[in-house]
Length: 283
Ligand code: GUN
Image 1 (cartoon, protein in one colour):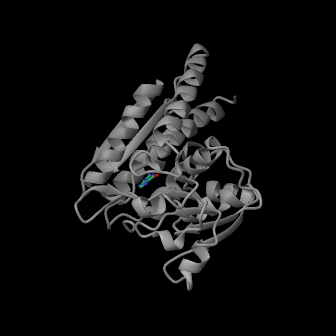
Image 2: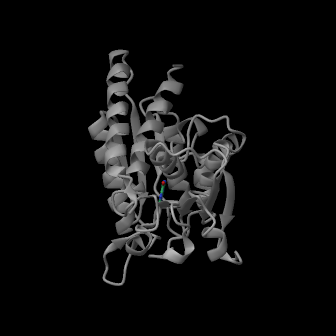
Image 3: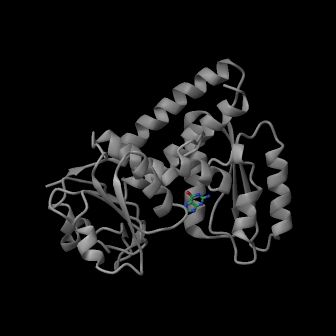
């Protein structure tokens, strides 16, 4: 039986710390602010954006929402970002992805000031993460690291396997594990012998986007299993990339879905926004 690492509990602690620091900043006349942009009507994005606004209110940040119609042009979106880049009341800018097909996501990410890029998606911030000299960590991988730390797990020297190589999760996740001296393997859809590689992992991070993809025979007995997936199963019920019922008895630690990595992403966004406010006020 595995220890269940509760993202609900760990994220509440992170948000409480951010709230306390926010109060101290406010005493110095600094009022952290986050702008959240959403384009179109994707229902999942709507839920994420609502949760981000709620978290801002809870920790005491100002939040501004820009809910733009599906047919917003790239130029219109770029103009809004330019204004936000120059608005001193806004410390962080987050443009919810995915964007409608007619908008070039790369152009949008590149247009956000790296100092306000609380997602850490801008190439300049990605480069900083690569060399281990960063202000902002990408929220989901940073949340996974926080969960690992909260359980007292030492990454140093461990065999770490990350399934998934996205720019948002897989690649930066691998880098953060490497920074802590893990021996990291990145697997993806073209990987041969996936089962064998995964079943050697001491720490297994699943970020594939396929419901219940990781089965018990892909997991080493006693492994630490972190599930980044947010999917629906055959009954429409929320589930992760890991088959929890199968894998949990075999793992030493495991994160559930929901209530695992998900709440951490938003907590780390709050942490990044606080950091942005501090940097922009030379603290
Ligand atoms: N869409 C899914 N995850 C994320 C995220 O972490 N940030 C943004 N901006 N969009 C997302």
